[in-house]
Length: 277
Image (cartoon, helix red, strand yellow):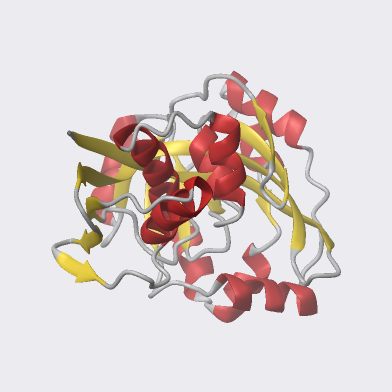
């Protein structure tokens, strides 16, 4: 049996940091949507657990979230199932696009089928929470408001389809470094995510641009000023909404038409064209 899975990236229409926690983590309030940009994973039954990424074998027991997901399923079941896993990367790493979390979520879902575990989605979400804050959303997908530590997911129905141009700036940022910078200089934006969701559904670009926000942009730009320059470049090329996704360093521009987005992508070195979905 062979399973092929698409691990889709996400963008943050909004990201607000609501409060710090005693354990050093932060409570978040986010509006998120999947995009068509994706990694491709294949899974086959095997005696042992192995992973290759773009043709390069990775050691079992490392920090890769695909292997961690497989091992977490084995631990939950008290078994030692094996699989030959291959991952083709298209989502930039350390970009705030949820690539690793998407790979992790796709692995939990695919191995649940491959190994015929028949675990319900709630159990996969529980396992996913232990692996990363974005993993539960990547399992659930869609257009959703996500709060807390990523565990409170409110589905908002089918998302609108917009052409998007993505720029991944530099070599990425450490999420821990961005939150540390936020603790020194950042502040909550008190975003109105209900109003933003309504503006997105109505395709009201002016309201979308006014209501969207990311509390981590200022700290991230302080660490990597090129992020601000990339955002300005997208606006100069006609993007109606421009934001940084997650903790960066990728930024995205939303365009009114695919023709406008494709033209902007063609004029911008390193740009990726995709759609929200």
